[in-house]
Length: 100
Image (cartoon, rainbow, N blue to C red; front, side, top):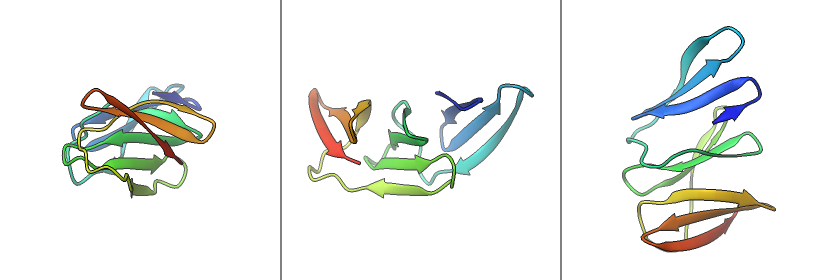
């Protein structure tokens, strides 16, 4: 994911940030569990899930990480897209919408 002059990607449990202009990179956060899904960006917040089934929001600016509550007890969330304050996620062939 490219945001504001940086590229972000996950390497198992670590969030990496690459400065495009200087070609340097840095580990900016270490998670408890391996990340399972791809990243989705919405307003400088990254959304993804981990191997334990948690759906996670990571604020790029503040480096705050929080687990989002999802009503259904379904694991393996994959963020698909964001629109008008909602994230659309898929799990086991079903699409869900959550308000952010």
